[in-house]
Structures are given as structure tokens and as C-alpha cells.
Image (tube, rainbow, N blue to C red):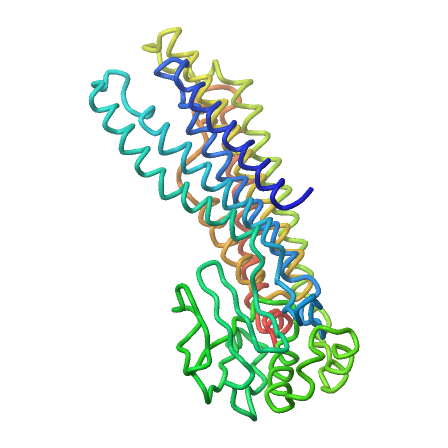
Length: 421
């Protein structure tokens, strides 16, 4: 399947889901939970999962001592295929559209029609920027971009701009090798002939023509990029061979660039990873148990309120189901993100370590939050004391797992293992 076909199929499926949600909301009872809002929540969660699924692709096989050979030259290897982020963004756009168009369903049933009409018009107007963003993201995934070394110079293409820097415009002796840490995300070029630089589009992210910058969101080793630019700026006789296998082999063989050697994985990282897995399993099982128990004890939970009518009881039981399903979905989503981050932490990814630490802090806050489960309404029943003890005990275990993971991730041994050199 080509990228164009994948984008078209994704857009069609998302459009069908959004339309189905809005249609279901139009025919459902006013007191029911808006179907389009439920669709929006599901799509929003799916977009987050897709975005985090791209993390392993970005961090796999980094710092390769090679370029991508094309018909026109040597292209920097992209950090990841733009198709997956494009699908994730389109899913997020679909979630925003579903929420904006169907958001007026959250109003009271007796809301005057003019107010509903006004909100509908405003929602459609708010949708238009999201549609434009979706079209832009989709076109970006279909359009080749990035940085490429050609016999004539350096071409840089972004979604919003293009810049071409001839070799004759570059000063000799540079650029120096950038840092391999987070402060080396770009290379600044020294220019002696800014009048030769050609550009079009929005150039703010590329720097001025007198000191242009090259983004380094790539799997090609940063030192190889700097060394290659410096070599071709000083050796015009070798430029004509750019784009050939033979020149690529000669170029990569000219410079001493050794692969990064990570220290052995410390015990703190290993324990943090397994603590994360245990916390994920405990959280998912707890959410599933909440859903099952709310269905089993639903009648007991509602019996305490004698003023409820049969219609109110049916609606409350439905809300219990929605609450439990949302809790399971949130646990699965957070668990999937935690597992992805933990795997990357075990491989030495520093951003994943920071992300997992932040996620552990959020889980700790949620575990200690005083807002309880509807199951705590069983306090006057025979099962009440057991539910209370089990609920607080499980919350305590989840909080302990989050604290342990957070502490283990921020100790110096873990930082030395993941911090880029």
C-alpha cells in the first residue's frame, strides 16, 4: 500500500466514524451520553497511542554512519517515516471535529433551538482550521522533505519552506562537529556568499541566510553530516561523485566516527522497568475489576436513593458502565504508554526516562486523589468493608509502585545510563 492510499483510507475511515457518531447522537435520547463525544474520546486516546508507538521507531538504529543514497545525492536518514505521525495527527483532528460538532449535545434537553443552531455554526467554523491542519499534515507525509547533499549544494525542505545552499556559498573550515547531546539538535553553517542562497516559504526555523541552520532530526550520525559538509566545501573535485555508492564508501571511510558505547544497564533501571510492568498489570486488573463489580452491585449502589425513578435507574446503570469502560480504557492507554517508555528506557533513551518519570508522577497523583470509585457507595452493604479495604490497599500498592519507579529513574546511576554523550 502506498502512502497516498494509506492516507486516503485513513481519512475515509475516520470520516465514517465521525459521521456515524454524529448520526447516532442525533437519534439517541437527549439524556444519553452524546455518542459523538464518546467517539471523540476514543479517537483522542487512539491518537496518543499512535504517537507513542512512533517513539521506538525514532530511537531505533540511531547514529548510523551512512547516508540514504538517492538519485540526486546523499539524503539524511529520516528519524522516522512521516506516515505514522500523519495518521496520528489525522486521528486527533477527527477527534476534535467530532467533539466540536457534537459538543452541543452536552447541553440540557430544553436548550432553545436558536442557541443550538448558533453553537452548531460556531462549531463548524472552529472545525475548518482542524480540517486545514489535517490536509497540511497529509500533504507533508506525501511530499518528500528533509536535508540532502547534492553535487550542487545542500537542499533543505520542510513543510513550510525550501532552502538551497550552493557549496560556493560555504566558508572553508566548518562546520565543527556538533554535540551528541540535546544541545546539538542543529548545525549552524558559516556563509561567505549569502547572495547565492536560494529560498522560498517561511524561513524562521532555518535561520538567516547569513547563518543558516540544518535540523538534525535524523538517524544519520551528526558528526558524519558535519564532516561531509566540511569536506565538500573544501574539496570541489569530489562533489560530482555525490550520489554514487563509491563516493559514499570513500566518504564514510575518511572520518573516524565510532559508534556510541552505552554503559551496562544499572540495577536501578532494571528494577524501575519491572516495577512499571507490575504497576501496569495491577492498574489494568483493578480497572477491569471495578467495571465488573459496578455491573454486579449496580442495584445495591442505586438502592440507597429512594427518589430514583425506573428511568433514572436505567440511566445510572448505563453511566456506571460508561464510567467503568472509560476507566479500563484509561488504564489500557496509560499502560501501553508506560510499557513503550519502559522498553525505551531499558535501551538507554533519556527522553523516555523523563517521560516515564512524569507519567509515574501523574499515576501517583491519581492514586492519591481523594475522588473515589462509585463502588465506595457500598458502605452500607455487607460487602462495603471489604470493598473499602481492597480499594485503599490497591490504591496504596499503585502509589508505592509509582513512587519506586519515580525515585529509581531520577537517581544518578539511571541518569548516567540514559544521558546522551
